[in-house]
Image 1: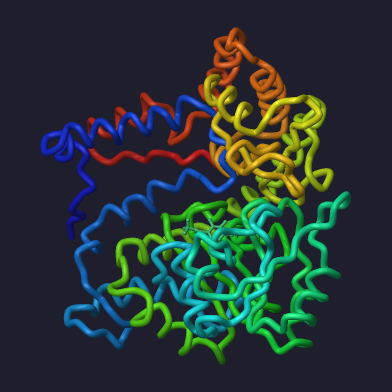
Image 2: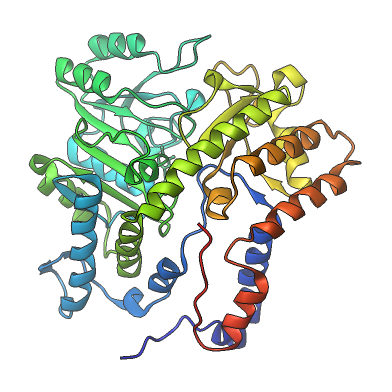
Length: 437
Ligand SMILES: *Cc1c(COP(=O)(O)O)cnc(C)c1O
């Protein structure tokens, strides 16, 4: 049996321009600190499945019930993936076909709501997501979205406000989750409100499902009707979406993915999700997720020592939101100044932000990528002090010095192994390329 591809030399021959982009991007990833909270470095095994001929197969439908012939082989991959997801998340049912987190959310709206129905979700500027009813998204254009937020001062989800809004507006669906929530979510509180008003309870676990998979934080699965997620954030799988749900909703939700919202599934991505779930069952992955949180907490402390105020006072997860008003630097400037020094993070609105979102008073940082590289709490302390220097560096005079500090860290913990190892691997036949964990 032979495995065809991925053969990088063929890409170099056929399309040197795109081959150059691929190598430049690897160099960029290796050359700086990647602190975007929604990114990670997926494994060589996942990349191999993604770069496989499974990409060719049309497999509309589900295992054993396809609209095309010749699906008996890809059926095996999808069924293994579904079974692993059910086991990993202790769920009744799983669907791995959503092309992305947004696609998974669209399917849930399609399954449970009619246009014009009311949905209650976390407001975007308080940490929610575009697909949770913002005006620029289908979710806010076609549905009547009502938003809860965080209480001023305490900055944690305002559960009283959420309950009051649910009683007043009687939403058909309540959504918990978002993209900038550093704290654990009280799923039982949401479930109780959903039951009281007769709403479907959806958890969008895109950001934190990887921590759930590693058993580092409590799971929403026992509480929610459906849990949607991405597979490429802390989870460390291929770029894509998925959901798990209660048995009673399985048929309806499956139909909402296909044929309602999508066509043929990306079978190479479905197979890569299966590989990722297998990796997530290991003790090493569980240890990784605990380290992700320990690192986020160490980094948050280090940034607080630099005068950057952690929103909610800290973090229980892989990410932190920092309010920079105390040091008089906007989120936009902080992002630019860090980037100039080789530190990649994003500006982010903070709750009750006086600035428009394009400027923002905060930044968001996350530790999934640096933890995959093998960095620990001591390194986070160093990163905190480098960020502290970078954000104050108005004229760029310190950028070179900060970049040298970044360089030392990433050379000690290279992404995708040491560059010389990887070169040796691509020059010869397959050798093991250890993924730092
Ligand atoms: C990332 C994210 C999504 C969207 O995922 P995509 O794969 O980019 O579509 C949805 N919801 C939340 C809360 C997210 O953080």
